[in-house]
Length: 229
Length: 218
Image (cartoon, rainbow over all chains, first blue to last red; front, top):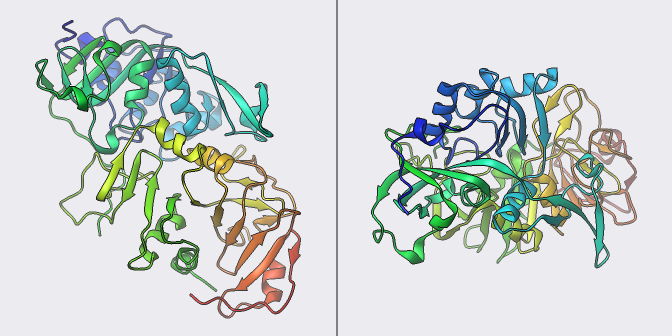
C-alpha cells in the first residue's frame, strides 16, 4: 500500500496528449502547483482540464494555457485570467462554463459511483440547453452527469505513505472531491508522514482513492488578492 | 445618491440576528463591514467556509485562507471548513438565510443576468447560478444604470441569464425596490437627495410607486 513516488515528474509520467485531467484548487488556493509545473515541462498537449478556475496569466493552469497545452477547459469562473478570456473569445480554446456547485457535485458523484445528479442550477439559462429536465415536487431540476477523468491531481497539506490526506483551511475546496473522482489520483503534499501519524478521525480523503503521493518542496502558494485590514 | 459603501450600509440593515449570509464579490463583500455590533451573523464563503472574519493585518496573510473573491481573510472563532460540494449542498438545501450578489441586469419578473456579455466579456457564473436557483431570499446590490448610461432594471433581460424569477429585492445608488411576484419593481425608498422622477427615468422596467416614498436612512 505504499503509494509514494519521488516527485511530480514521476507522478505525471504517463499523462499523455488528449487526456482529461481534474485539477484541484480554488483560484490559486490549494493548487497542485508542482504537478502543473511538471505538466508544463512535459509539454503534453490537447488536454481537457476540469478545474474551477484557469489560474492567472503567469501561474497555475494559466501557464499551460500560455503554452497551448489545453484543448478544452471545464470551469465555473475565469474572471482573473486575461489570456484565458482572449483564447475563449477568439475561439482558440474550447470552454464549457458550468455552475460551481454543479462542477463540485459532478466530481462528488463520480467518487460516490453515481452516474448523475439533479440540480436546479442553470434552469432557464443556456446551461440547460440540450439537457434532460425532471420535475420533483413542483420544481425543475437539470440532470448533470458524473465527470470522467483519466487523472485527478490534488494538493493536500499532509498525507501518509498510504495516500490518506488532510487538507488545510480553504485550500480544501475541490481537492477531496476530485481526489475521489480520478481513474488515477495523484496527490502532492507539503508534509509526507508514516502510517499512524495522522489521526484516522481527521482524514479527509481515505487513501483508497489515492494512487500516487509525493512531497512537494518550496511551495510558492501565490496569493491572488492580498487584502489586509 | 449612494456610493458603493452606502449601498452596502443600506443592505446591512436587511440582515437579521441569527442569519447565515452568503456575500458575493464586489459591493456585497463590503456589507460585512456594516453588520451591527452585537448581531450574531455567520458569513458563508462558497469556497468552503462558515465564519469569515476581517481581513488579516499585514504580515499575517495566509495563502490557504481566502474568500470567494480570492482575497486573504481571517476566520472567526467557531468557523467551519468544508469542501465545495458541501458548500453548495448547504446552499441548495436552503440552510443559508440570505444571499447578496451583484448583477448586470435584473428584469421585472426577477430574472437576473450577471456572467457574460456575448462576444465581449466572459467571467463565468461561478457560484451565482447555484445560489440564485436555490436561495429564497436574494438581494441584488448594483448600480441602477450601467457605464453606457442604460438602465439595468429592465422589462426583460437582454444578456444571458444566470437564473429566473429569483431576485426579491434590489438596492442601488438611487433606490431600494422589491421585485413583486406578479412582476414589476415596487419602489420602497429613495436614496438621500434622489427624487422619484430620477428613479423613474433610470428604470426601464415597470416601476410601481404606490404612495409617498420615504428617503432611506443610511
